[in-house]
Structures are given as C-alpha cells and as structure tokens.
Length: 191
Image (tube, rainbow, N blue to C red; front, side, top):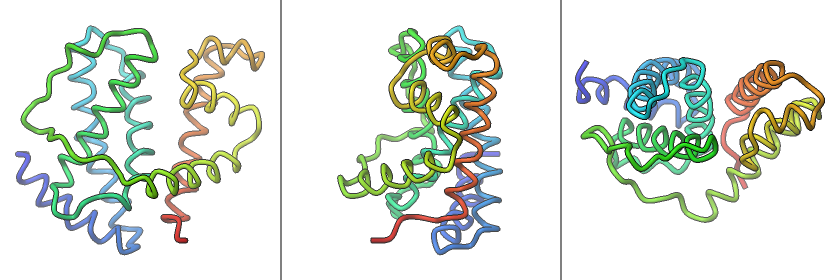
C-alpha cells in the first residue's frame, strides 16, 4: 500500500476518532500499528537490532504517545507523517536509553519534521499520563516510571523492585497496555 493510499485510509478514521468515535479510533490504531511495526522493525534492523520484542516495546510507547498527543495533531498535516515522526522520536529515545547511537537513523521520505506541541498541550498530556499511572498497582507504576520516564534499564528497575528482568518486562508491557486502555476510554483532558 502506498503512503498516499494509507493516508486516504487513515485520515478519515483519525478525524472521526478526534470527534469521539471509538470504533474509528480502534480501527485507526489497528491499521497504524501494522504500518508502524514494519517501520520500527526496519529502522531497528538498520541499527543492528533484530529482536521483535524490542520493536513491540517501541510500538507500545509510540501508540501511547499518539494517544497522549492526539489533541495536538495539526489537521492540515498528513496523519501518516505525524505518526511516523512520533515513532521515530520514540525509537531514538529508546536507542539512547539502551545505550545505542541513534545518529545513523535516516529520515526517509515518509517522515516529515513537524512542529512540537504547544506548552499547554504538554501539560495536559502530563496530567493524562499521571492519571493513567495512578490506576496501576504501585509496583508496576514504579517500574514504568523508572524505565519509561526516568530512563533506567529494565535490569535496574527489576533489581529495585525485587523481580526478575523477565517479570519486570512483562509487568511494564501489561502496565502500558492498561494505561492505553484507560486513556482510550477517558479521551483527552478538558479544562
């Protein structure tokens, strides 16, 4: 599917999702997940990283970021460029956190530089994130805060929590999924 065809498919779904259409939002997330998963796998492979679980971790972070940032989307911009830019930024963050150099990632023709969200949108996103974190058990919340927000390694967070690294990875993954479900039910913060 070409980028133009994908944009034609995704844009109406995302625009309907912005008005509160949950079915369109679910369909958008399913369709964009397929595209972003391939995109992330390709970029990770170009960085010498071939584990599918790593691509899935970055994909989950990307989907959460898409959800938290959806109210900042500029409707004059292509939704595919917006989603790919967020995915790339999440991948760069992931590579930095895991001690890999991200400088060799090239921008391909599918990704365009977009302006960052306004400051008030960032504040709202932090409030939404805080509320979603509060719904998690304390141990899971602590793991996510350490790994995803403070940049600690999974091994470090697991030691702090008295867990195996595998158990910590599972808890983080499940916690992120629960946060995504919470946020998709809640919708954007309104002040």
